[in-house]
Length: 423
Image 1 (tube, rainbow, N blue to C red):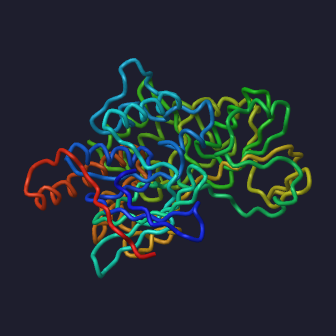
Image 2 (cartoon, rainbow, N blue to C red):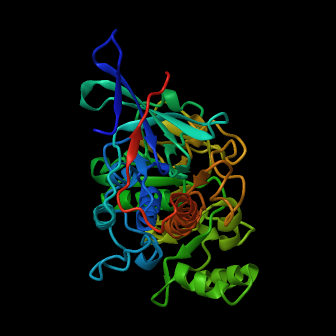
Image 3 (cartoon, one colour):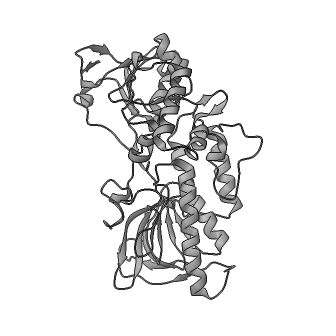
């Protein structure tokens, strides 16, 4: 990389330190949020660098999702700015189709992330009024530390950066296999096995369904209340219907209408152990970020008894699980569909904009911009459409400032200047 200045460490030839000045923003994360922001900055003529700790874009989709996954929402709600999905893609694109779309998106806007660069820390230097982003890369067999210095920092690592593993009594002594859903690919290897799926969100439901389809014997732990909605109502996407209704009616009425439609289509799910929350599905999504389950077939398996619904876990034994109701069930394997969380607190040295749980303190639609050139994209709890909305605002905001400073409407050739950093 000709734009990086090497600082040799004479103690170890396999170790190098570099520093680079970025004229525009540093974007941390090459998922859909980071790609959308980069594309819009490119359109504004603003130079940028995208840092990605793995070796590919959209690593969550490429490395930590199961094979049968499809987008849960219609494709028009999941496309990124300035590039719609191909017309021949189905209404609900598959995992592979979505990855192909994202790779085509990166090519279309000439987005070339710095792969295998894990951000160790990012802090704002009050003296210079600049951000200092330190990364470590071990690509090529040598360890390289890089410090990027920039005016703007865009956090695009998202709400699902790392797995959540609950502290369950006895799990460490359990004798069977235990995997997080991020490691699950297919139910093929679980055939004829008794599998306990911990979690009843969209992942837990779909994994349970996949296990059934591969002749496994799943039991799904439903500890809390959950909204289950049909994915479609009379051929219309439930989500699309909700969006249309919210343009005309207050949120409480939309929630009531959705629950009535859900009852007409899928009936009373509480008799199967799926208790509904007291707060409506859209209000719960907006206030707590808890997404309703869009049924893609699991409910039929629950009705038939092929998926058992069980209450919360008290503790694990060597080959069993004891539930809070006192029942004991034999278990061969455990799949933790217990979700993900932000990893921002582990590397961003800032406490005004982001909360301790790694999400912006200001709720949507005001959680995209902090102080001192700090931005966040992909933390809206509103999926890809929310990320796109934030990306548009961020690119416009930085683009305006960039053009004012450069004294021109567009910069055709982004460049990075060399610098030396004192480590």
